[in-house]
Image 1 (cartoon, rainbow, N blue to C red):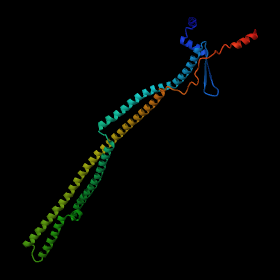
Image 2 (image 1 turned 180 degrees about the vertical axis):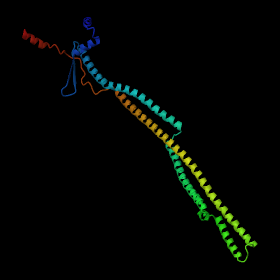
Image 3 (image 1 turned 180 degrees about the horizontal axis):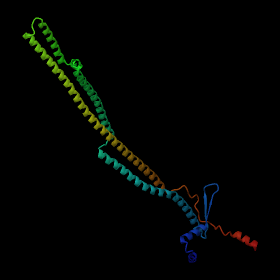
Image 4 (image 1 turned 30 degrees about the horizontal axis):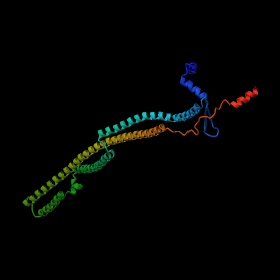
Length: 317
């Protein structure tokens, strides 16, 4: 009988599919109208086989349902595994870029270093303003002296009037001139004492003139030194400003690299968390479908119905 069955097989159909088609022809599946219960019936010639086939179809249905649920999860896990590999490489590359840049610049704590250098820049700015103010004052005083010199009014300048040495010489000159006037009343102009006092007056005037020129030169030197100091501070301020600008660029670059590392880390962690969740779903071996009443070996065949057949035959006969 088996040879006859095999000979009748279509060459384009595999034996497995042919036997499956035979089994399906003997299978009857009816869903319940009022519930989610499915009734499975299998017909056959052997009582021992029909129960096994019915239970086998029920178990196959459960297993197929489970595979339909976990198969997409398995595919998704494979996809996420490939994505995680790329995300891990991206994270490693971002961390390497940050580390290399920090080693090149030596900036481990960029905020602290930038704050320190910015504070130094502020101090130099204050020093520069102070130096510029001092320079302006010295230059103004020097210009006043030059103008007073052309008008022969150096003695009227505050710097000259406040000079204690010049004021002392002026007091001495005044006293000597008074003394000369008193002595001139009783002595001739050629008297030795009158000539000595006159010579003393000339000497005092020369001293006053030299001290005025010395004060003038001193103020000029102060103006020159103030300009030089202002220039030095200005150069230091420019260098510090350039350094702060460079540090700001480095600081911004490090912050950008840190953000890239943080973003890559978050993406990697989220992908891993999602993958582990899907992996657990793909590994589950239970489903909400269960067999309520397993099929058992029938006591008597369902067909043919012999009493019905005999009745109908009798009537027809």
